[in-house]
Length: 468
Image (cartoon, rainbow, N blue to C red; front, side, top):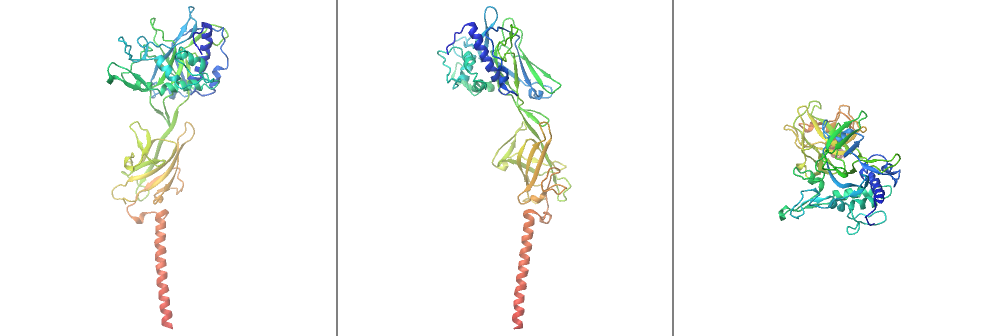
């Protein structure tokens, strides 16, 4: 489809586009993503550019926080400007492509060498390999502005998958920053580049301020407000990046939201019209969280009561040992027990594996304290769960292997859901007469009985011979 639309046509195209943006921006939102486009935009509707703000909404305010008091770090890149006619009415989108004048990332060049990445570079990257519902693909030579083409073609019916694919395509593209010397050349992903302390964001000229609002029902919003500048117009379509890592509140660990695509508000000038669906500067994000908690048990001496310090344990999942990073996250990647993170019992015998997600694990004793049988190392399986979205950690544990009888609780439960203890012993005689140890004892007794029976049989035959 060729561009060069008239103002009225551009309005209809842009309205269609931002209906698509309603899906692209809220592809991860809760509820029905099609709700924002049920009312078709009217060609006679006009809109003017409103205040340059973006509001990010979440049903749980913790999704928007990186600590109890601090809002998550958001960075934005403008991917398209709003075009207006002589009357100030919105007419469409424009993706700046002159690297010397309008780089989005990197610095402008006065020498002619490309040093920055433009909004056009980014938009075209997102369009690579995408087809519209009719099988059409973007042709840079004939189709004009890439964002306007995306607006006109990537609505994808009621699903909005085209715009989600567009944003995902941008996120996985490696962009090249070209300097004067070959050693200055490097490839980067946008989010990785933005994380650098020396990252240069040229558009917008200044990043917005962020204000967090918490509501009584537990929901919240972050309002991104751009500076007021008579010489710089901040309105337009933005990629919004959540730059914060995981944040834990209670048993929930919230992760960064996916990249968002949202426009600053356009205000309708008609009494009954929808100029552009979802072009009100709002985006709704879905809570991205994993419930995590602390799993504890007690290491005890042979009496089954007194805590024992200095015992070391490791944890496995799906055959791989767990490694806990400095950020507290567990990754189950180690093949060798010596590469695993070892958790040691404290003075009262408490062993705590912190930050575990729901799932099934195997816990193995690796280090036995001095004075205890070094080859007696109990193991057990444990399944961790959480009682509802805000509930506490629960577990179900059972002893496994040769020394399963050393895994117990004071109630004598075979399946343990509370009061889990793991015992060390100083002699074989202290091993429970259950499991493999008990079987070994019964086997020894059987051997002795069989031997006794053999002696009795021999003696009986000797007596019979003597009588004959």
